[in-house]
Image 1: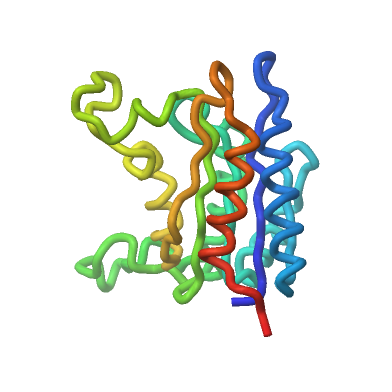
Image 2: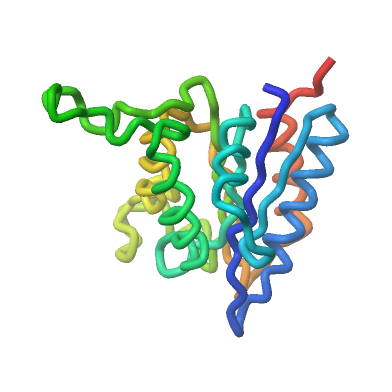
Length: 198
């Protein structure tokens, strides 16, 4: 596990320039490189080449998706990225379609991933406070957690045969931020999941 591909999915909005997500990406990159990992980075705002992005997915042992939660999911520019890159990669580079064929339609849907053995980590920034999650008394999420909210993203990676690492989240980043503590927690999270390479 020596190759790490980091995606900065932030989309600037009038109330959110993307500094926190950008800083988390740089912290992750520096952390990984200091521990001996090779790192590649894609930022939605910098543009990308579809075939290059597919090859980054194939090269990486681990992918880190750094994203804000925008309207209960990823920003539109990363959704466009998925529509372009992931659809192109269904030719066998990321997955062999959905795993079924006309001759073998009984095979399980979603079993065509070609990235088995690779992992991914979600790192998400939320306007919602930590207390909004995992508490049945909170009406909006109804007891659901951050991974429940991002279940579609987990399924996208599972479609490729990848397995999850523990999700990281920053909470209440607009109304009650605790950025200094978020950075400490992020470093500790990376330390736990990514040991120094020999």
